Length: 388
Image (cartoon, rainbow, N blue to C red; front, side):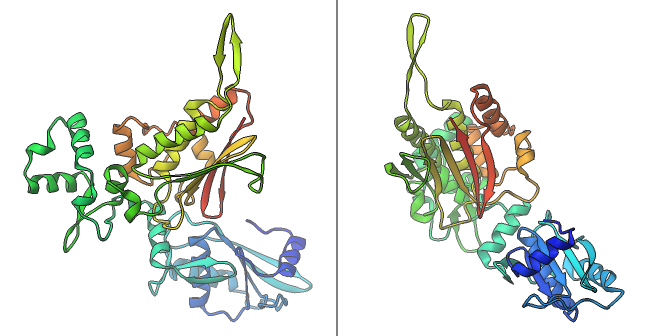
């Protein structure tokens, strides 16, 4: 969000501070300004107007070296250093310094006293453990799907399912191994992980091979709702919660969507053929992509699928990782937020790693003559909407 026009700045000052706008007076300390800059960079970006007080009164800036001082703060007090856009604007004879901070591509950022800040509403605050985890995950330096799940053990895994997997893809029988050897195999496969005190299941291990994954990971699963009209307030036709291993959830979700779709008949020559409202291949790709790429560190939210009269919405918890944009996704650039899930679901023939999912969905829907699918970030969700 780049501010240029004077009238636009006047309107912003009139509307007051929000999640993307912060007012500061010239006397702000370097430490405090660095905290504000880091908070914006760790969030969705924003603008800091220096020379405006909290009530929106224009006080102005008199220091001729203000730009140099701001750039030094961004370089020396913010780690990694942040390069903002600086603008000086004169309003009613008073100068305002505008610092434009983009959404950071090298999250997480922190101040030189080792504190990580995020922007929440009109204020900054130190990131919680869960929020910090998401920042590191977005940067690719940490993958939540191979992190340990407290309170779990090998008893939470379905060894029969694991045995079948290794027989098929690694050509050896897990039951011929000793207990210690099985544990080592599971650790090497990231299905379990060794902590300082014990061996625990990983998030991905439970999601692919768990007996009851949602027992330890309540965020696992899909909430499905089918509405008669085009709004979420319209009459509810069907509602289901799908849980279990994610590959089983994918299969369940396909059944639910098929059961809720109309299948009108068309005449092809002398034969009557049934035609689905939506291409089955597109629906399966959307379901699997959502299950594999959602942010599982967001513990309070399941995936949501909403079916309306004119569209289906796939709501995936978590914003896009640092370097991924919607435009990049459209041309097949991908990033594995959950590389464990990608690897195992690829081996299980649910996906490939080529980043073809979104381009395939767009191409297929275009060939049907339907409106182009909509990809967007909404709050802490990524939403894919497929139209009839």
